[in-house]
Image (cartoon, rainbow, N blue to C red):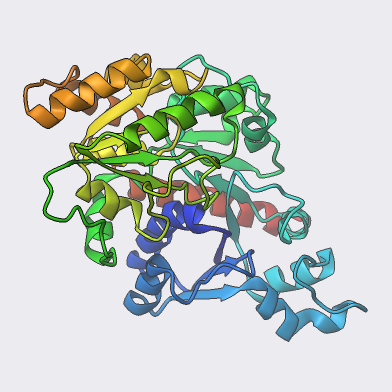
Amino acid sequence: MKLFFIRTFNDVDHIVPIVYKLAEYGERTIWVFCLNPSFDIKNDFHLKFLREKFDNVRVEHIYYYAERNYAQISENGVNQHFLTDAMAKKLLKELDATVLVFDYLIDSAQSMADSLINAAKQLSIPTIGVPPGLPIFSEGYRPDIDFYRREVRTELDYNIVPHHIDADYRIDHGFKAERIRVLGSARFCKEWRNILYNILPTDMLPDSGNRKRLKVVYMERGADLHGKYREVIEKTIVKISHLDFVHFVIKPHTRAEKVHFKGIPDSVEIAGNINSLNLIKWADVVIGTNSSILIEALLQDKILFYPKYFHKDKMIFHDMNACWSVNNYGELEEALKKIFSGNFSKPYTKQDVDRLIETVVYGGQRDRDVLGEYIQFIQIAENKGVMRSSQR
């Protein structure tokens, strides 16, 4: 039996497409266990879709499952951040687990993952890490911040990555190449996006009133890594908010769920409760730097502004000329004015965007069956684990 482990909206967004494809293939019962007791698995629309469409998918908080079944194994019972190796081993045995799938951003020592991975190793059950996002750093660029390096400090047997740039990053940090597979992005591939748009809940979108204004969304990055750039970003946000021809909205990153600035005027609309896809559909212009949701803006054919002066990182959509790059606030405001007037042309083409999508979403193969290849690799890893187990 295949077991998937989720924590937050982001990894749910990227893991559910894989579970969907497995369930569609007629896989026997698939368990999706949530490692985060505060995540609302009942009302998440991705998980609701799985439950309503498939009889062979089970979704549950692992804490409650363990508490019902394995509390007697521990003197202290089960609490919100504890699962003994014995409990994990018993769970995997009783469910006849044959492969475990996590997102590879998870720290193995948090939320019971450490015990589950240890138990899997003892039972010769393979573990696979899948993307919780879509890395969009430049080829050859290596972020030196520990926040990024921890992605490759893992005890997982395999990593599935969306593109060769991400694979090279892991190999650079010591992850063995034979344990990596480049298969594209399950979340952003066409097959899943066609489904996602149909199951996406409607939102109450920002109201521009009777005034004709340019609808601009700034997609905030996840972790608070702004550093010395915080002041220039905040000043830019304030200045944009004062432009009378702009309806300006900030979307907090779904992992952080907050905006990292304190000096933002009350007039700026914070759209924390609006799904990013709906917000992008509403927008004329999307501004951002690091978040993988910027790929969605390109897929929806929205104008993507990349303010290079917001950070020192290097992004692939800039290198591949698939965005409107600006070097300072003056260039940004001037570009917004041109768009509002209608007297402009984008400094990048559809061909530029298509080339980027082929690279990062399809792993260099435009016709790749992304979801099909994910399932195929998980099955291969599973069979290897079954063979190892039978030889023990």
